[in-house]
Length: 94
Image (cartoon, rainbow, N blue to C red; front, side, top):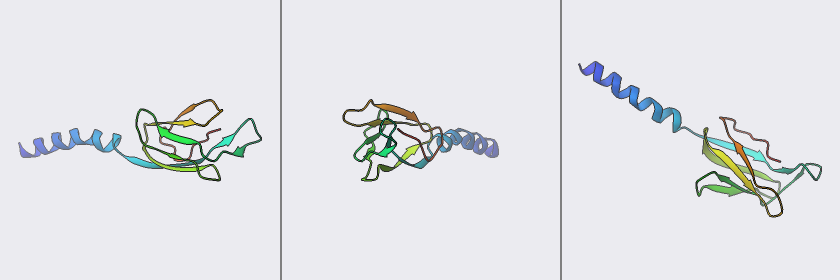
């Protein structure tokens, strides 16, 4: 009986480990309209949260997120773009 309980307990914990894994996502934000120049100061947010960061002077960002999250890129004068992570750790955003 104890073994069965332990097995069921571990089985129910499995989704917590699968869905709760955080990854480091990195990338460079560039402008497709302007010959792929880097865009410093772009806001990179995890959709439906308050977690985010800002791209550095080279347009690079680094953020901890879940593999199932979606990143939202926003910049003054540009269209806001949403990119699903889908377990990728380096995302194209331009």
